[in-house]
Length: 281
Ligand SMILES: [Fe+2]
Ligand SMILES: [Fe+2]
Image (tube, rainbow, N blue to C red; front, side):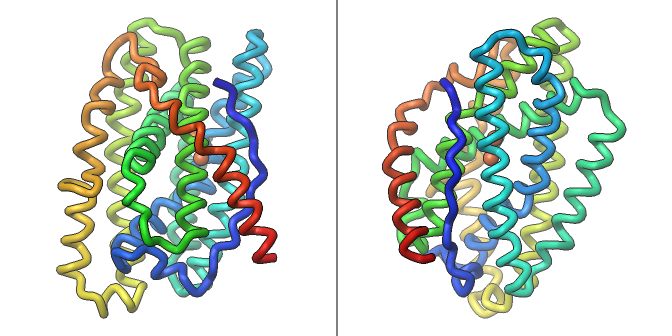
């Protein structure tokens, strides 16, 4: 599985950034909140993998790492633009990005390279699980403004395509011994608590800054979020629970959950995105 860098742009309409999802403001802001983490988060993933790049001898893994870095750089760029649009709409995107940046800068400057790589593979496991939920439940984006929907599908497909790259680097350089296992699994527990803690906090900040959320009613809006995460359509946490546990198997590998059939959608999505972008510009 070789990830390919696709230099795609998405002309997301600025006036729809707070209401692009048909389920309303709270769900729209949930996706928008996830977007806030990508520019700095994906820069962190790139740095932690790049540190090992020059020592990789296997040409296939080396090429996969180059593809991985290229894909994450494109995601980072597109989400930075997305987040600028959020800031222009009066949402605290810059302030929340600064919090993520301070945290990840500290982590980069104060922890060893293998621990940073363990955080990267844990968060890549989360992006792969979330991508799988999205791709398995296309109705989640049904009725959404099409440029936003396309951008999220593109990101989900490429996260799937490169889901094992950082993991293979960890396997090669940190290994499969007890220390590597403990660092990998404790990395998942810590990353899970920190990531979702920040997501919920930032989500509340985003909702409070969005006047349309208040108008729609918080009780109803948060009810939708609870349903979205814990019950059905799609029940994000319920669906992620088993793959999350699988990570604790000593012989775990991301492709043991084989969902590569989704990748057949990429070429068509790329063509669609290029058509839409050239029509808009
Ligand atoms: Fe990404
Ligand atoms: Fe990724």
